[in-house]
Length: 139
Image 1 (cartoon, rainbow, N blue to C red):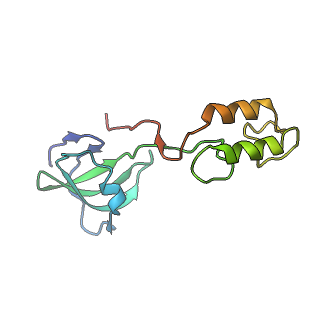
Image 2 (image 1 turned 90 degrees about the vertical axis):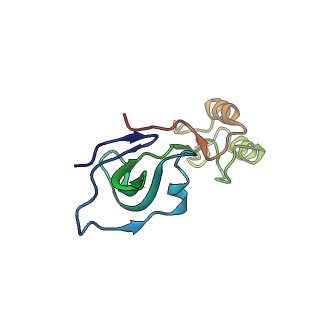
Image 3 (image 1 turned 45 degrees about the vertical axis):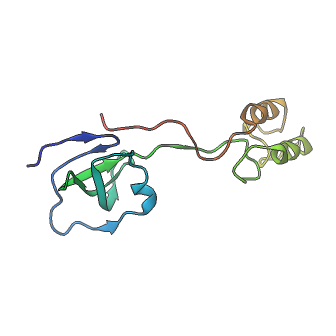
């Protein structure tokens, strides 16, 4: 059995058994590796119960199983028009629905567009989709 070695965001396990479903990893997953990582990700074959991507990679040239935890992506709740940023367009939409029961503009979901929704939007003003909330790594 191969020795388990920990790398940032990855945990090595023994090489897979024959017959494992193999799919190539998209470049976006490979790009999640930190610069200088000793890993070369070869293929993904599933997602484990904790939501980590699992598959096969090379660690210092030797095949190992990996579990990859991607950074979580923040989606601003106040991005009403879903254009990727909380901006004046979202503000105008919330203000135009102020006092109404409009679920699309009701940011906090309390049933009415009110000052609480406006406050939430102003607190998130300028936030963009993709702002990371933190990366998790194997223990």
